Image (tube, rainbow, N blue to C red; front, top):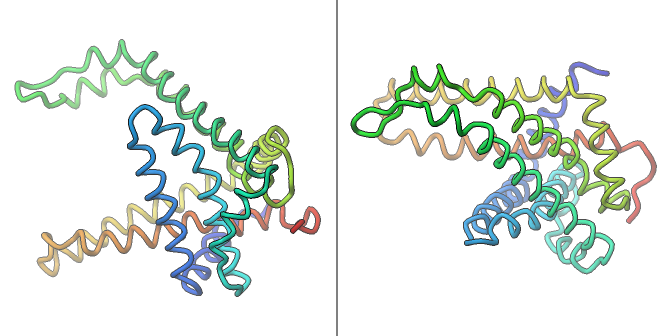
Length: 254
C-alpha cells in the first residue's frame, strides 16, 4: 500500500482538468445539475436521480480518462450505454441500490434521532440553542447513518466501471467494489483529509482576500469558480483511483 497514492490521485486529476477543462467541467456539471434537477421532482425524485447516478459517474470517468490519455471526449458514449442491454439493466439495479442506501440512511437517522431532537431547545424566534443541541446530540443515529451510507458508497464506488468496462453483473460489481475499498480504506481516509483541508484552506483564503480587498459583497464570485474547480478535481480522481485499483487486472473489453 502506497501511502502517497492519494496525493498522486489528486495530482493526476488536476492535470486532467487543466488538459481538457471543457470536457471535465462539462461532465461534472452535467452530473450535478441532472441529479439536482431530478431530485427535485415530486414523489419520484429520489428514484429518478438514483437511476441517473451510474451514467453520470461513467460520464465523469470517461471525461477524466479522455483527458488523461489525450483522446477526444465522446459525449455519445451515454447513448452506447443506454443501447447496451447488459449495461442498461445493471445500471438500473445499481441506481436502485443507491436509492435504497439513501433511503435507509435517512430512515435510520429519523428513527433513532427523534428522541434527542425532541429535546433541542429553541429561542423565541425559533432559533436552535446550540448548547442544547450539543447536550442532546443523537450520536447513535449519526453513527448508524454514517455506517450505512459509507458501506453503501464503498459498494457503489467502482460498480459502474466494473459493469461498463469489466462486464461484471450487479452483484459481482458491488462485491468487488466494496472489498476493494475496504482493503485500502486508509487511503480513502487520507484522501478525505486532503479534501477537508483543501476546502477549509480555500474558504479561509477567499475570506481573507475578500476582506483584504474589501470585496465581501463579491466573495461569491470568487467562491463559485474555486468551488467548481475543487469539485471537478474531486470527481476526477475516480479515473486514477480506478487505474490504481483495477487498471491492471486484464485488458479492458471494448
